Image 1 (tube, helix red, strand yellow):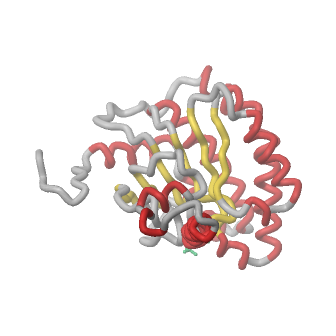
Image 2 (cartoon, rainbow, N blue to C red):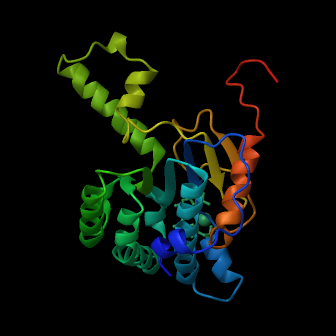
Image 3 (cartoon, protein in one colour):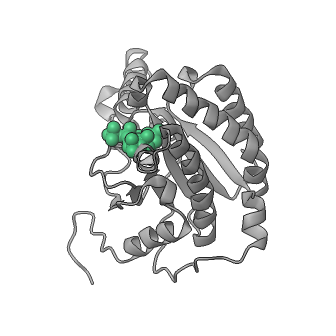
Length: 254
Ligand code: IPE
Ligand code: IPE
Ligand code: MG
């Protein structure tokens, strides 16, 4: 079933909870595909395939709840160190997923953006991504950001490099460099920082994900493996976010 069909014709189940506040931007570390498969005696790639279904479910839930930016950590710079079979399988899955769902993404007015070392990806994957990014850059309502071959330290180092280049060229005075300057040289400077970061499968770490952008994000970790993380689980994370008192270093006001 396509998400286009799901979004339009299927009764919404589970119910969207009444949310006190909805984050503008949610970032997700989609983890636990391998363990999900292992526990079922299946190859790891089956876990990744089932995880792709969760991507569709979460896209739908994000639309229904009014989240405007969704960033999904799909492949880290460190994930290149996995066995070749798994890396190849993941790249093929990515290409197939895009081909299969491009139309629904466009129909649902979702803009695709990518952050990471796109040039390290197989040519066919790059071509598919570039095509869909171009097709979706106008007339969109929400943004899906996929972190691919992404590493936060690399991103920050690239920002430092770009700033240093400008300084060396005399275009920028080093004394004027602020937090804002660093942020403006990251991969997607126009995207607001995520207010909520979800990690599935229980690991209590960031794994080199958005270290700069998550400075003040609320963290939500669930034991649920990514392939089992669907609409209901996404709404639960939003409900938890709604109850958080965000203070940004200030004092409690409520
Ligand atoms: C997340 O699931 C997907 C990617 C990192 C590509 P994992 O493949 O890391 O699954 P586990 O952590 O081994 O269970
Ligand atoms: C983080 O998961 C990367 C993605 C979800 C794409 P990992 O499974 O690679 O992270 P670690 O190895 O548990 O830190
Ligand atoms: Mg993992």
